[in-house]
Length: 424
Image 1 (cartoon, rainbow, N blue to C red):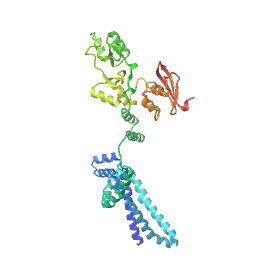
Image 2: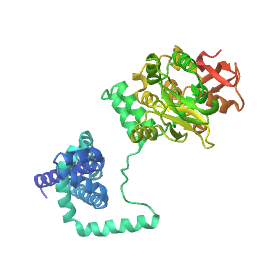
Image 3: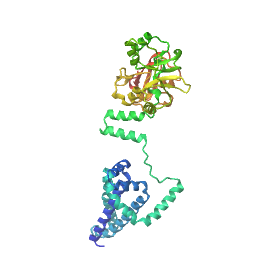
Image 4: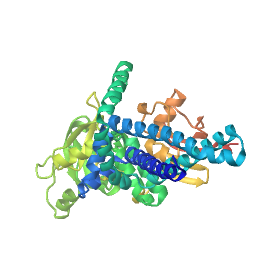
């Protein structure tokens, strides 16, 4: 074979190898979601890419057959065509063979392997839809060979118990990773990132992490006088108040709205907490519901206020639609009293009833031990101390020092959280 014929043949092999290498990476790396979007926008070739991804056996077999055949052919042609000319120059047969091998290998590694693969990684979906039809044609041409090799591979995988079906299920972790990448790239604003993150957290956070606990619930006995009710409503400006029999929170008969009650008082009408025009039925929900389930319950019932009970039918707290939405809005909502106040660069004052998820986010702690056993930072301290906490009790965890500053009987009012580098 003349040098010109060998050069043309090598160029042809080079182009074929570059095409197959680029197609291999583009089709394999194409993102399923983006391809689905392209298909919905009218790019029918994206459907072909998705089908090839779902059944990659034939595709991979074609790639390996072509690349191996090209490598063997290129080596043989290069050796026979180039080596004689090099031997005339350097007068050494072994050296000329080595040099021709190195030249052909380097040329194919650079132009037919490395560069096409890197180019395909820049825009895998766009390149995949352009190259998928020729790859389908090659798959059809090599179908008999594919049947043999692909079938043999499937048998071996089956014997080894290995599944050959591509899994593209999207997990919450995948979505979090995409959001983090979008925030770092500036595609998502910080507030948007927190908002989306809060929505996903609603599936994991239970209602008890947001509720107004039992000890803070303000309620009235059915026999309470109008003057006493008005006095409490002025002092505790809530929108809704529970009404109970015998001053017992376990015997709730409904709730009254302060606006409606005070309106009747201003009109000098006789007011009774048991009046059916004022008293509204209370919605009871279990303390095991997630915030998302609570939101769905509010939507289906039309309520915006619920009483939370535990498995023993004891009232543990109340929750409103506003409480749920404050978790969704997160940092976009300014509360009258912030539960976490950053004192210095490395220290925070934390209210004892702060949900543990908020503490983890504010401090940047990756994880807390056995977090399913507690809802608040007080619960975390109690779990770690293995006793009823008292003032000055402290623990060290995950490069942070947690110290109790104030208590009220058995309740933790406030903690000081400090990074280790500021602990004395």
